[in-house]
Amino acid sequence: MSGSVSPLAPKTFVSMPALRGVRMATASAGIKYKNRTDVLMMVFDKPAAVAGVFTRSKCPSAPVDFCRANLPGGVARAVVVNSGNANAFTGVKGREATALTAKSAAAAVGCSESEIFLASTGVIGEPLDATKFSGVLDTLYSDATGDFWFEAAKAIMTTDTYPKVATRTAEIGGVAVSINGIAKGAGMIAPDMATMLSFVVTDADIAPAALQAMLSAGVDPTFNSMTVDSDTSTSDTLMLFATGAAAEDGQVRVETADDPRLSSFRAALNDLLKDLALQVVRDGEGATKMLEITVTGAESDAAAKTIALSIANSPLVKTAAAGEDANWGRIVMAVGKSGEMADRDRLAIWFGDVRVAVNGERDAGYSEEAASNVMKKQDIPVKVEIGLGNGTATVWTCDLTKEYVAINGDYRS
Image 1 (spheres, rainbow, N blue to C red):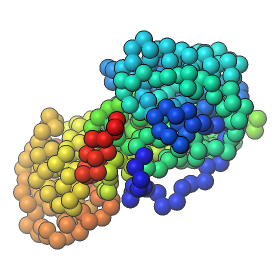
Image 2 (image 1 turned 90 degrees about the vertical axis):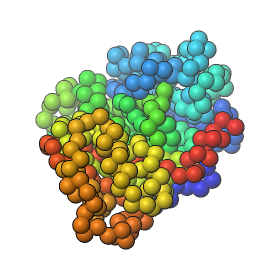
Image 3 (image 1 turned 135 degrees about the horizontal axis):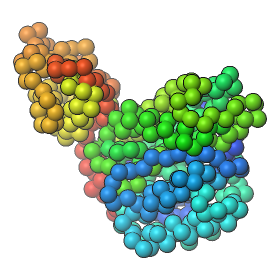
Image 4 (image 1 turned 180 degrees about the vertical axis):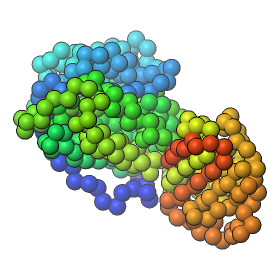
């Protein structure tokens, strides 16, 4: 964690209420960082329904493999997360570390190892010494408390400069339910199914299949629409748990995602996922700007998203933003290389409300000063009209600064 907090950090943090049916505790096991918490245990007092989405990387971490194997069971009693070591590309040792952690957690909670879920974040390729925290899990289980979301978010940080938390309320069949979430991520962020690490819990009573359908749909316009540096992690994990505690208030269990009673919940969940995703972008390593890139008029929504990501992932676009340079020629470049259909002579580009290019050339009314003023802001909206169809997409990214190179040049040392 770098010394200074991102200039794009939230000015105030939301107050995170306790959520019925889940308790948390953290510990300092000294995995990589000294004098800070690096292990989180989340405990469900009764079996919770679980859903998850994970990295599509072909080199996934051992914990991702472990979670994928347990997910079809649909039941969770505990989650153990560590920072400082990703337990990725660690071979047989990696599998042994997940097995030992799961065994220790299951013994502490008094459940089956198939009801334990694991996540790790940090350095890739270093064996993880699971004995370091297998010893603390008994204590964590007994110490776990409901009012601990902020501390939980802190324990999973790596190069993050602030903890990421969000909370929402909704109703199901007239019964009030809550959703709380935490996330971590600042670098190696170009999610493909999920973000680095994020854990979302609701007290609603919803079956695993319905949770999974909502989560899988919810990641696309949120976590899968943001990028810090175009790199997809080996460890991307986003999990959603439902404790079912709202059943005590008379909430009738929802079995399928197409149940109309879920409309309020789905909207609240999607809003919370977007909130967490944008907090990750705003903590992009070394970031000083956030760019919201909207592409309209593409052949399809998928094409629009490909073009938007081509712009968002361009080092030249991102360095121009860092230098507050309204270099719209780099937007033209990124559109042209995306592989999607574009017509040079129909293209229009806006920075904020300032149209800088139209019909394939610089806008006749173009003002360098007006465009530069937009680039001086922390939040920079960029809009590109392709002029071919009805496809639209919005993605979010941050600028690319010298600080990003410094953080990643020194990451292991």
